[in-house]
Length: 544
Image 1 (cartoon, rainbow, N blue to C red):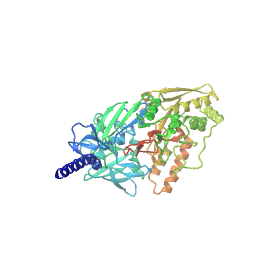
Image 2: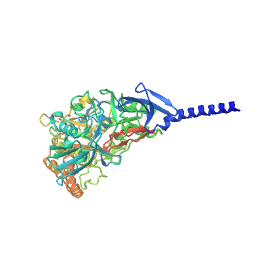
Image 3: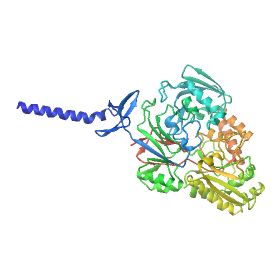
């Protein structure tokens, strides 16, 4: 009997050990799974949990593996990672993975504190004091401080750097640094909307701004690999100040074309695809495993950029004529799959926005009006206009151009559609230079504008120096200045209403519709959301 008892005790002990071994990884899955490991990136199975080896603070440790999200894009544009020199929408979803901004827009569209934990302003809205979070570190381990804020803003403000974000922050008079975590930014002009200006202003190590080979941010992911215009691979920043991501990493990969990207999404080779063509909407909706990201409101705009310094579009009547020549209803349904919001007023503010102005001209489709206005601007029957679009992507622009081509033909005007590679298309109008403007006479350039998704910056995108149409209107600029110094919501609405009426009359860029870039994803991906102009926010994504 004693022997049997010992055997039973031994067997019970063995079973207990097995159970402990099986349950141990799951019990420590909340943070660090436990033991040390040898090779970074190795994944092992422990019970029903996958563990991945990662090196943090000089120690290689097993962490719970959340998988790698595979994010696809088509076309080009992902040629650099400097977050404050963005020339293509393709770069925008990558920036917040590697870098943090001082403020952030949440899933409800509200501006919330981020690297700046709080802010205050003087009554004249010219001085803004930001208090920074303490203990935030760059990927290199160096602490983030107020001097980093100043150096990033100084770099953006320097016209020699041609930063795409320069127009958002406006002109800064001076900085006052107090200790290491407080900075006062003194503006030359009042700006009651200044926190909104900081949404797309990312805080990079100053070396990143001057050396393309140094990518050092404070974001939730760290750079692992980058091949220009091909792919980016970022890995979990386990020491992230706001709590590490549930993902091991994100691979951003270029697909050869939209068809290949969609097939990869359907097969599971990709988890998300940015900027799928509207022609694929029905296909995505028919697949039970796929869905679209949606935004609370549309703040991006498909625009037809016109050179307001060259004939014929230096004449407002030619711009109005083009507005009347657009069959927006057909374009919306045929080219854009009925997703977005038609802009009958050709203005950048949507109908749902509280500041939307009433009483503006409705540019309903009218070829007779278009013909008459074109003639007054010197565009006659037999003349030719050119339409630039992108080759191999943005098929909605090609479809829009073809509809416009067919309609212009009815009034004797030829539209020559010319698809261009991204670099050639971009070089046509970017970067903006007041001293050496890029002229493109007789040409319509399709583009998608995605300013900071707040009304102030949707309107500010068309101030002098802020638009590649080279429209400079002193009255509009003055109204923008007044709007930013408005002391109440009612005053702000009244002023921005005047701006919309002015834009509606002058149509510096013709706006067929407001929309967001379409992002399709597999329904197993959770936690991400879409900004109003179409930039997916992947920082909190996970598989679930």
